[in-house]
Image (cartoon, rainbow, N blue to C red):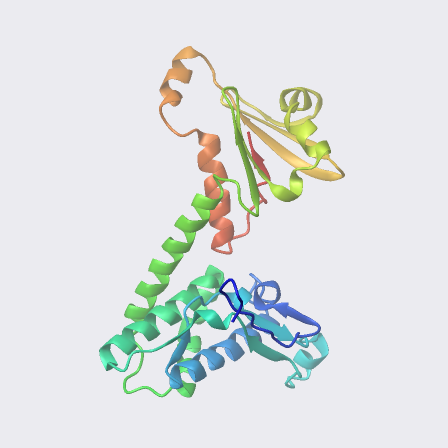
Length: 274
């Protein structure tokens, strides 16, 4: 106990490890499937011990030792090991059977919602694997589980969409009487800021991909990175009045691009909105 209040917790360092968020692909490859199956087994073991990781996301699991193409080709088990971390968020499951069942569905729904939508086709296989390792009175209801997955996905989406409109670890938000701008923090160097301040001039001097009344699209480059700029145009004063009281099409595009990414659906990476 510290004099000013508070505690230290000291952990062993896990060498040569990556979080499962970095290891599990959005393409449902063999290595990712092996990792997911291992993780489902760990979750079942935790539930058997009447505990659950309440903040069940992929960054709360570390993989030490990596699956190689050679081990996959020979179908032999690699020497990889998965560690559960962030133990402050581990909670005890209820002794009440009905409440415990609800906690299990909620916990599994939280986990499966972290995976890209492409993995939904394997849900029956994942549930069968969980039922093989978990101590259950009754088989899991697919309908109840899918309902929890849907709820968690909506929750994750809402939380992330709130994040993309404010300053945080990933984004920088600025606004004055003339302009509102949200940019990804890793694209916020002086070179990039100069780029954002001269978008109209860049569009005029770049290769046009589309030249319409309501939208102009061009191919540009900044700091060695190829970019697509889409400018939503205001055709006339009447068009301006019609759009003034509603979120812009640019804002919907910015939100939807991030929402697709949250669900693991490939889309061009949104870098900034001005």
